[in-house]
Image 1 (cartoon, rainbow over the protein chains, first blue to last red):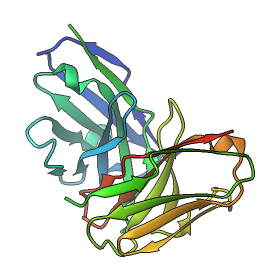
Image 2 (cartoon, chains in turn brown, yellow; image 1 turned 90 degrees about the horizontal axis):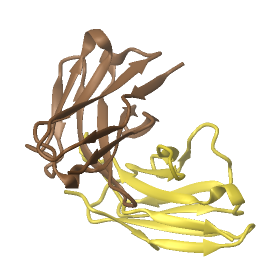
Image 3 (spheres, chains in turn green, blue; image 1 turned 180 degrees about the vertical axis):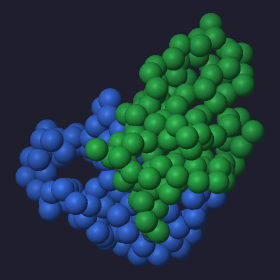
Length: 119
Length: 108
């Protein structure tokens, strides 16, 4: 089965670091871009950035440049999203998603990872 | 950045109604426009890609149209299970996608 499986929910304190993951299976992981989408509580979807696991080419949305780091481990078929110093405003659900084809359709999504940052 | 604006932000309609949601881009994006449905607690699911192509497995009551800057998602005969939030997404800007703010649809 083609799927993206994300790591579990996290509860962190402000200033702590965090790395969440997204594991692809059922397809050639290195041949497809993987993007990250933020959804704050009760709010809409925000595009954060995207990585090509084949060569680790990363593109960040301007709003998220410098705020997070996107990486991938080809050997584990896993993409990552990490923070070095979390803020309360990072509280959100984070989805990974795979665009298919040249029209950028996000046809495959992970189940989401809830990150809660609270003192 | 390409900005996407959806309207309305929310609406309520009855079973069997025809419903239209609009999405406007501040830049011409040809047909690089996709529509997603998101139900509470779930990841978004693609309904329409390339402005008007129905994704496999999506009921035919969903349709999309538009070109350039103005796009619409239409549900021809609303069903109870269509209660959800709907998002448009532009993919014209390669790998730098943006979403509309969402339209919350309640089925009475």
